[in-house]
Image (cartoon, rainbow, N blue to C red; front, side, top):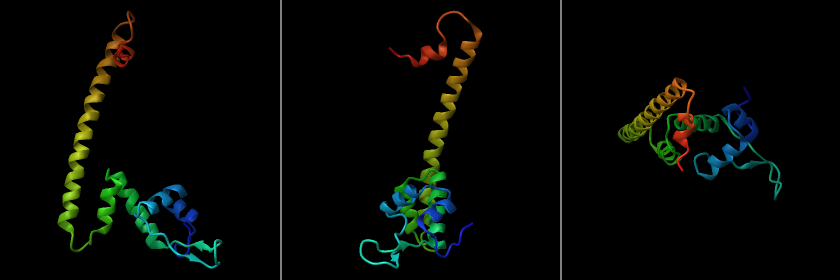
Length: 138
């Protein structure tokens, strides 16, 4: 792992397992603070240095995305006070569970339909393939 005290954007991205453009995107969205440039002046302005807090926040964003939260929801989670806003955090989690449950249901239905088509395709070599026919809605 890289020195967390003074990482470049490239080192930060690598430590978090994302691309530099992902870091910049989160900065534009206001999810990740843009540090001041150190050294230099004028347009050359030096290099931005990221610290362990930037890395922690970037990992938080990625973990929350992995749980299915939208970037807007992640922004709200980041603004919540860990000691004071537990009720709102639970509410956001419950909302996300509802979204995930609906997606899981849709995926289970799609899986069952595809299994039926695969079995139908395997059952006979005559006529058009049921899988291809199902997707060809002319």
